[in-house]
Length: 209
Image 1 (cartoon, helix red, strand yellow):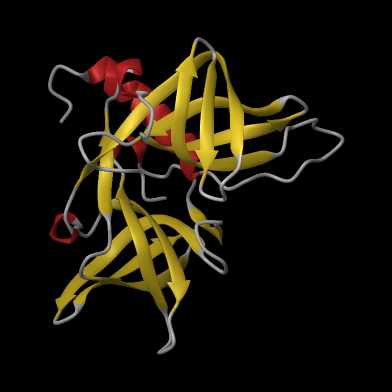
Image 2 (image 1 turned 120 degrees about the horizontal axis):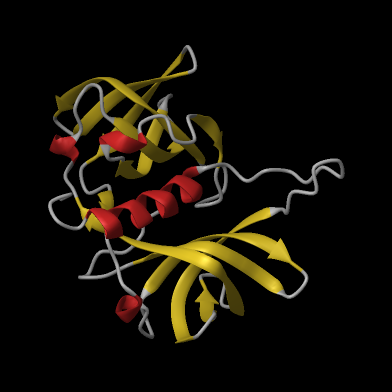
């Protein structure tokens, strides 16, 4: 995928790295803005503003910061997940114990270690995001189970057949068309969300995170 699209891919790396990081609490001493995630579809894009209808039904104006980055996702397969890969997996606790994946992002090798850890994630109630290295991957009748390791810990996550599995891909501003699905890690500002990165769906593939 790298081939001759390295500049665009590097932009995508920046976008996904930020998207995968946990939201940080606000501390008065460091003045860091609260992080929020905007999930929805584009209504309009003009200049430095992206109007998005969120999955909750609200329409918000996202301000695009100077130098903002853009990327998309491309389909991958559960069989692409190999020991040693660095992945981001959103999951939910399963009734039988352990976790069941909601989606999987396979990071490019250059991004190994980005946002490593396991933390709460707002994809669904009680969901979590785990960015970790695959220790082993075992194919079973009902999908694949991976053991991932992060910061000296291990976690087993089942990946049922049909779970969205993606990797990053380049995108251009021409992809910011009405109806395109976006995932935007943004800062909470008085004027509304302020974004440094945007992840947009294209070619029928939407950001599942």
